Amino acid sequence: MKKLIITAFVAVASLMSVNAIAQSTTTPGTIPAAQENPNQADITFEKETHDFGSIPQGVPASFTYVFKNTGKEPLIITNAAAGCGCTTPEWTKEPIKPGQKGYVKATYNAASPGTFNKNVTVMSNAKKSSVILYLKGEVKPTEAPKQ
Image (cartoon, rainbow, N blue to C red; front, side):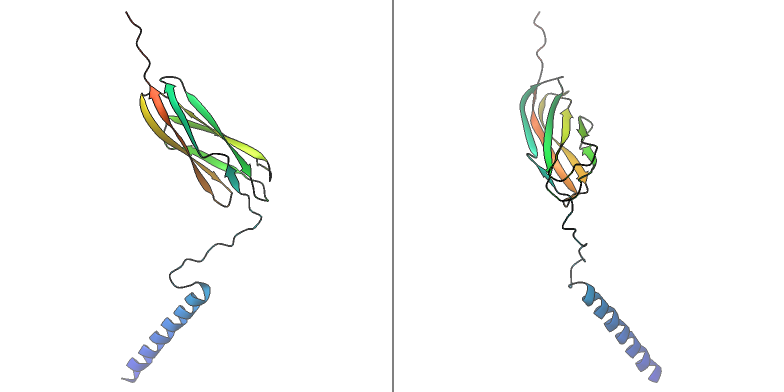
């Protein structure tokens, strides 16, 4: 009986100790936040959605999204990934200094007729590490030559 009481006491003490450590580092039900850098780069796009309207089939359509580094450290675009193989992104490869501008250019191949909604995900070292840019419009079929 004595061993059972001691074992129970040790178990309760251990649980209380673990709980105290957990409460001292986080609020219950939350995940600890990473330390935010007040000087971190920040990315602000002039526009995040572009509507091409009607475009002809078989003629690639491009749009250049312009952004500004509104943070206090250099901004680095680490990748720009298209949501499908029909869109090709290009972007500023060198670090963008605070207050300077850069670009992400998206080219849609317009091979198939019909409406489209495509996206490009831009990843960087900014406070918001990923931003999704949108392209939309309608590809009009080319007319066959009349006989």
